[in-house]
Amino acid sequence: MADTWPATAPTIEILWRYQDESRHYHGIGADFRTREVLRKGAIGRDCARRCQAPVASSCAETIVIAEALAESESCPLHLENTAGAGGTLGRSFSELAALLEAAGGGPRLGICLDSCHLYASGYDIREPDGMTAVVDECFAAVGKDRLRSLHLNDSAAGLGSNKDRHANVGDGELGRRGCATFLSEPRFDALPCVIETQGKERQGPDPEEVQLAWNLRKQGIRRRRRRN
Image 1 (cartoon, rainbow, N blue to C red):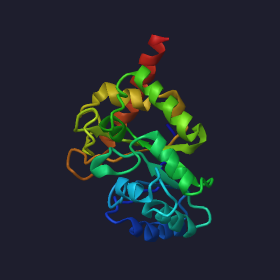
Image 2 (cartoon, helix red, strand yellow):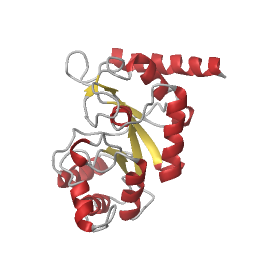
Image 3 (cartoon, rainbow, N blue to C red):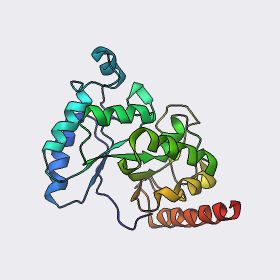
Image 4 (tube, one colour):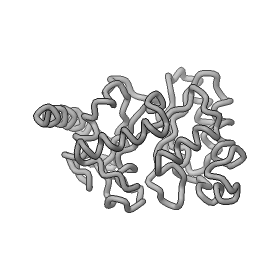
């Protein structure tokens, strides 16, 4: 994992609020932005059906992406995979690839992978072989250079539930073993990772949870080496 962290902001409820946040982060000199553009307030699959295409450039999501990018000349935008709740786009890599293409495929567009959302959308990432297959699929769909950041969250909901329910690291369906597998994926080594959990006191992750994540990463690396 990288030692630097992306600038983040609370989850937006309405898509176009992103533009104000983009201006703010560009103004304070953030190197890049990680944003769950499609998670809350997205029109999602209904928009795609009306457009009679997987994703069309005239749909609300791609319009907002274009407007957000126009607010800055340098601030990147990462599209996060979703859990699929409420019919949102982005729960599969093919949908993310289509969104990237419809939004113009510019160099500032990237992908953020969320461990909870992967599991909730049906990707079993608890063991190294499953994690490897998921990253292979991601790279085949969007290209390895598009994966630029990570969100670490355990999942309070089951595999394929399409429910976006974060749990503290190690306390959910992924468990410590699954979180260790996610964190120790070799192709994630240079990527920044953000923990988005509520934490024990419901005030967000504390230093103990961050340290736990580092420890789990080390455990995952050791386990992978024993397998090889």
